[in-house]
Each structure stands twice: as structure tokens, then as C-alpha cells.
Image (cartoon, rainbow, N blue to C red; front, side, top):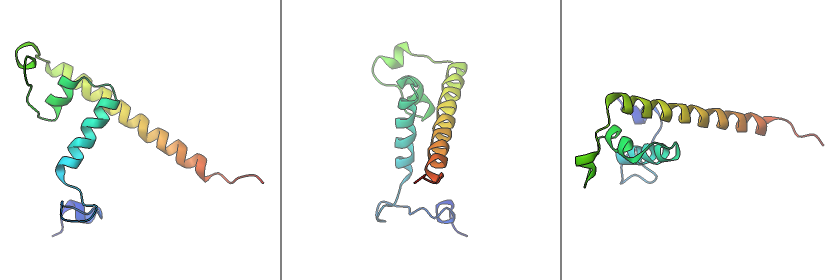
Length: 97
């Protein structure tokens, strides 16, 4: 049985030219969360990164805080898909001569 990435036609593995690894996905998600305006503490906690330094002592986001952060990220992702869809449909319109 093939893996999900084979079914999706994605090259997987660092030895594969242009192959991706799991950390590539995490890096992209964290970068996109930054673009969406999600606070670092929430990004770290959602992705399972431990808090460091004084954050460990002073930051204590609630489950509701994390849910709100994910909702904001989801809205941002949806807006990006809509923008890409609009850009693509505009590109597809025939040009008038």
C-alpha cells in the first residue's frame, strides 16, 4: 500500500530532489501563522514546541486562547485560498485585443 505522499504525487525525503520532510510542513505552518498575526506563544503551543525562557513562568494560554488562535489562522488560510482563486479566475479571462 502506498503512502499519502505517494498518492498525492509528492516527493518525500531529504535525499529526494525537491523532496519534502515533515519539518518542511511545520515550518510552512509556523510561517503562515506568523503572517496571519498569531502570537508566538500560541504558534509554539499549537505546534507542540515548548515554551522557553521566562515564557515558561509567565505565559499560560487557556484552551480558549488556543482555539481563538486556530480560528484566526483558519480564517487567514481561507482568505488566502479565496485570493488565489480570484487571481486564478482573473488570469483565465480572455484578453481583449
